[in-house]
Image (cartoon, rainbow, N blue to C red; front, top):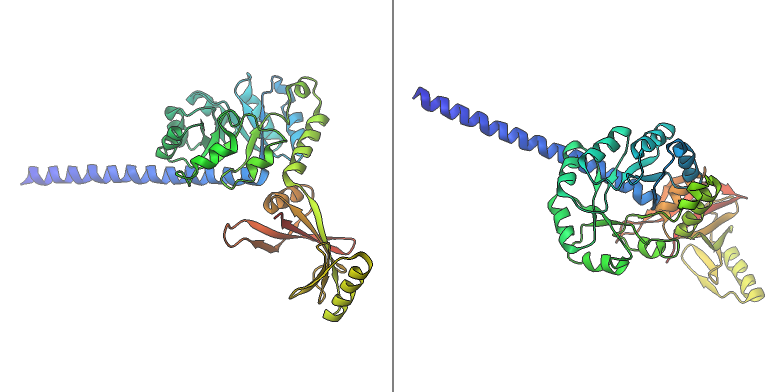
Length: 357
């Protein structure tokens, strides 16, 4: 009886140990998932991830500043150049809030070196299960590269729902991503390879694409010449193209519905802008909106269309313009932010961001 009880106790202890290990593993997985989700959210805000091969370590801080000045607070420093881990460390030290990570991470040792240097994420051109498992076990947010349905299944089996799609254009581009998202609806992508200013918005318009990686904003020639102004210009150009800001209408505050209609009648009589009466305002064509009662802004509001209200809010905050968070509205079907006002008035007019239709 004593031997039986002893054996039973030993079995129970071993079972408890296995349960504890499984629980610990689950907690570790959840922690890594939370960290990866935070990285993905920041990628989604930024929209563009510059892929960098920097040969001169001493230029790390200057490059980081050039990127930030251009509106891109992010960098994927590839291990294709020696000293990548030192570049990461120097960027992180200079700008702790910058989303600095490592690219072309092919081995567990490279992942460890990048993470020790302060990298907030690691990505690779391919899917190596050994490296993926090592990163997940070590608490390193990791996105392997892939370009096929079979590799997507491997990534899902490893617990991943965010990957690098590489080489994007050569592997089929947006059309291929849309086709595989039919069966693999939970997967999210960062296309890299062949992405340029000309096709960037084609990718970002699809809701399964979180951001795009590319080197066109940090060309080798500009790096070799240490032309930081050119890199800043290319970054700002890419950000502006991504956002696609365009003024769509001006709203005028009127004292009452009668005044609103009277002003709309004048626009129609003078310029042929057809009047359309709504619940809270009267439009003259699509350009002028007369509010039936005083609304936001001392004089009215200016509506600016953008490809992404969420990214526009992020970028405008970087430029020193705070949003009025109480004004945020979201699409009921997709959950995407589609309306936001800024706190500051421009010449007595509130500024109103709207999602481009």
